[in-house]
Image (cartoon, rainbow, N blue to C red; front, side, top):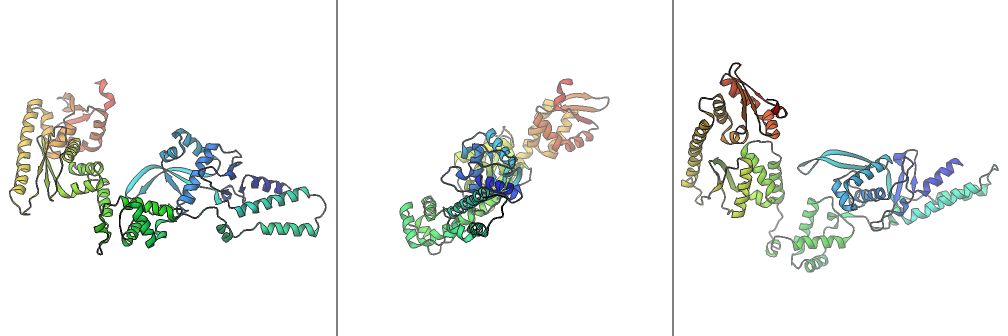
Length: 485
């Protein structure tokens, strides 16, 4: 009798326990964006009823994993902002609901570092369902009602008397009718299964006529089907409930297609993978580990400009050197840079090199493709003016620090090792706090905590070598101890 009571309670809350909380089956039936009615009395492993907001969050997770992605993935990797936007909640409430669902044994939550495409994303919210969630069809509803009737029958007729053969026969019939096959469940689903975009390939000529009207563009059926395959490869996780949704999606894609109808409808037209190559090229630049000034500038350009423009700039320009207040760029392809693009490049140059850069000098492309005056002039001016610039910089530095001072000689050695730009950016802000001529030790400090941290991690060996060449040792005073000196 106790077992019958447990079964009856389990059926009422729509959870069938199989001797393990993680093996429990939770039925659902989505109608619009409402929480499934079957979850009205949903209770977790901790014997506590879920709050309304937690049920909404759980229904969103189940919908995304089992219907939107069609069970192709077993883990939902989304940001907190996604759940905040979908449910119109605050960050704190989303966290509370996640903790509630985790404690109730419905989900497993963890923050992990994942890789999407070529990007490494840190602290991404990863959610897995621990229960066995299944669609609740009309057939199963009838079977469950029959099982409940069976439980009522057994409870009401339970006595010390031995049941008759007639009772056994009735119970056997009810139990047999409660068993459903997977094929029957699929036939009685209340909504269709979502499919990938490639599952609708190929589209028919009638579909092509509809798309031409919807997009107001006369692409032929061959191009439309090729575009469908391209989009399905680019977005493999997108699923569609029916063909109407696919046609609406394709109509928008055709309306925004950059190719003209003459180009697309050409017999020799084939989709190339230039777009994918561009994305890979830019991703390699952004994820590069080269710490040189030129590499940093390329990373900034790849991140600031749109993909097509960034690819065009990076493959058409040879980035030179900063000479006094100018930065030189030589065009290796015949492109035109607008004033707006030049201004944005100049901003990134100043962010990497120095705010002293006031002008971007663009050397035009040599159409004759010969090594003539423009190329040689570029090479000569960058080398000679760099030498002149270093001399001017050292002369100004000697006036400021004194040509016989130890700190000036150290800076001169650092300029030869690191270059003028690094010296301006990192070593120039350093200040000499105290010079102990007896023990031959110099104390230096940075202006900001960030500069102090950067120099400790990247420049200590160079400083040690430069001071040692002058017969001195040094100490970089910790930023938090400045006031003690």
